[in-house]
Length: 126
View (cartoon, helix red, strand yellow):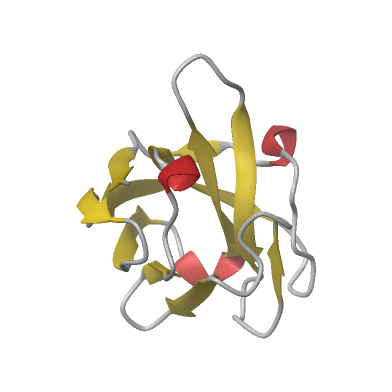
């Protein structure tokens, strides 16, 4: 199995930027697609974006399309989530998740991911 840990959360003003990182250890990281989900207080854990094993394909939720970018460095066992033009509604705990799938597949459903981090708080003030 693979173990993932998020870092880089914090407090930012609306319109600002933050970069989250997901560091992996354990099995060969390039065998895993990786996604970011987020959960606001009292709400469901929602899909944010995902990247396939090789980093050639990504998928984003409509709410973040054009503002957030996912990238990965398999040599460094990391996936990053660059968040720009942040809005107060982006406030949530952000989770990194990994799953072992076919190389070109980009899973977007929570049920498809088996390995989860503990989460990183992102707070956007208005």
